[in-house]
Image (cartoon, rainbow, N blue to C red):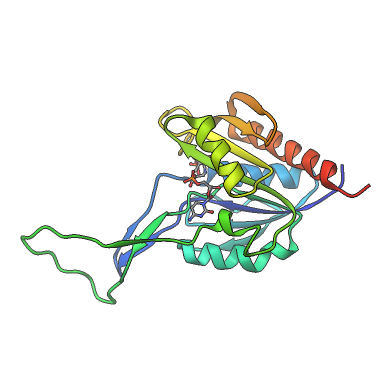
Length: 218
Ligand code: PMT
């Protein structure tokens, strides 16, 4: 199979509330780091764009650390032109505080309302805004109707494949060492049974490489 340049996103983002507090989620980065390792193992070159995690940087990858959704958006936008395939596995915050004071917010006896605004949709920007024409793989973290929501994302965001996982389960998904996923393609769905994330990652890289072969001009 031809060797490719993969852009992979991983981990959570942190959206600042003030200089000492932030909003985030349960992503450990394991799934994305396993994808990066799997792609290197198969001989591909990898740029890993990662939110904050406690994991070691995998050997052989180019690494770009980011903190918040906007930084991840900017990094992906800048780097997408150099990638043959992009796998966006990061758990990017969908909302961030509208304003971030430069001093710690002092507590009072009153309730506090935090006003949030949408972050930029990185996956949804890949085709139309960034002009990315390579293999595009998104993830879907769902708690119900997993396949339906994943298929909706596949179509709206013009992906070649969506990797869907059920994040209501504690044995897979967020911060576990195993995953069980549906690979949703435009014309079919494939089930990958529960296995270590490293093994799931190898299968995803193999499927992405096949998709690239199918897309390559003959
Ligand atoms: O990191 P781990 O602990 O190993 O956990 C792995 C995982 C559960 C985080 C991973 O398997 C996973 O599901 N990643 C996607 C998490 C997510 O944010 O899903 P979503 O359904 O909310 O987003 C759908 C897609 O849009 C994803 O490809 C996401 O990267 C992307 N997105 C989301 C928001 C945003 N502002 N921009 C985006 O590009």
